[in-house]
Amino acid sequence: MICARCNKLIQPGEKAETITNPGATAAGADIEIHAVPCRPAPQQTAPEQRWSD
Image (cartoon, rainbow, N blue to C red; front, side, top):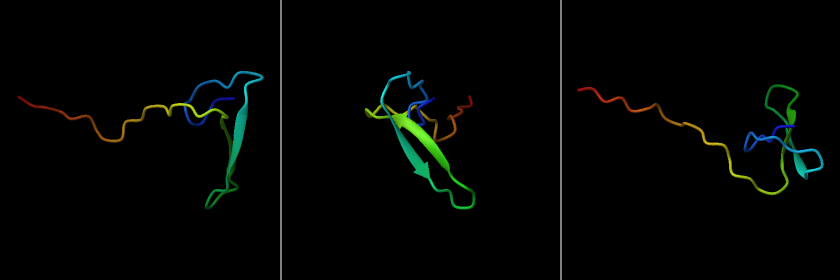
C-alpha cells in the first residue's frame, strides 16, 4: 500500500490507518495513511514564474 499523505510505501507490519472518503457523486473510496503522522508530499500550487529579458 502507498500512503495517501506522503506517497511512500507502507511497509508490511507497519501500522496504518484507513480513512473512508464517501465521495459526492460516486461510491467513494478507502485510503490508507501511516498511523504515525508523516510529512505530506510537496505539491506545486502555482505556476512557475517565467522571467523575460
